[in-house]
Amino acid sequence: MLATGTKAPEFSLSATPDQKIQLSQLKGKKVILAFYPADWSPVCSDQMALYNEMLKIFHKENAEVIGISVDSKWCHLAFAQDRKLHFPLLADFEPKGAVAKLYDVYDAELGECKRALYVIDEEGTIRWNYLSPVGINPGADGILDALEEMNKK
Amino acid sequence: MPKLKPAVNSKDHVQGNKGAAIELVEYGDYQCPHCGRAYPIIKSIQQKMGDQLKFIFRNFPLAQIHPNAVNAALASEAAGLQDKFWEMHDYIFEHQNRLDDVSLTKYAAHLHLDVEKFETDFEQPGLTKKVDEDFESGVRSGVNGTPSFFINGEKYNESWDEEPFLDYLKALIK
Image (cartoon, rainbow over all chains, first blue to last red; front, top):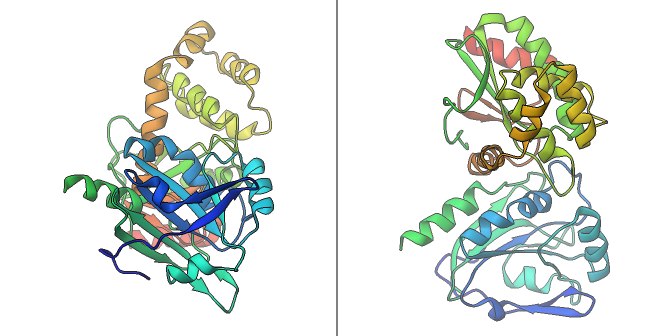
């Protein structure tokens, strides 16, 4: 993974069929980048479903969460509607996994993103990272600790 | 390993022997089918462990995927204000397929609660705050899905099928 203290690489990916999100647009906010293998994992232990319930808590910390997988924008749209997700899912679809590669969290064998988290500060510097075993939802305790730690500085 | 934050305290609903050697905390969602499956398992474990176990339930409603989960949690807390938290907790899990507001009120009547007080308490901001705080304590403690269990403050990541769960808990006593 990219080390803490490094500048988070810029990217621009589709969030919906007609909207793109660029990392630099989020300057001034903390950003939680959640790379995950695929849409449509089982519901009650789903990482994105958990973050969806936490938006209020993240917003209190001036943080935005963004999910990234290699699924297409249409797949994300259906997934987000089904699960009533209220935060963007980005499609790292073409060229496949390019942003995941940039962040050193691409699993070339599976052709999916690894399950990995980055927390980026208001200036665009990586402050925390975490690589989770692919089958385990890492939860959010690490993210919340990182956000809290950043507030102390 | 993530730890339970905050530790069990006076705001919690505790069932069983307060001085028990084993403290089992569940973060659960009343509309979650897995929690529904865990419910009779916990009951059976409580019976088999007797005075050696105390059980605590904290709310972890996934509101967006389970539209009745928050109100079910509020109903249990409102029942708690009339000292019937556990009765409502059990009744809800035993009727998990009907958790709309009308049904929840019916359950309150069935449990001989003061229904008028129940309905007023249900709307109290204090109860919403309690449910929110339970949820936030869950994420801070590393809850990543429901049900999640903590044993004596440590997250339990093994199987909660009855046999392995009971074996694990019993082994802690020896």
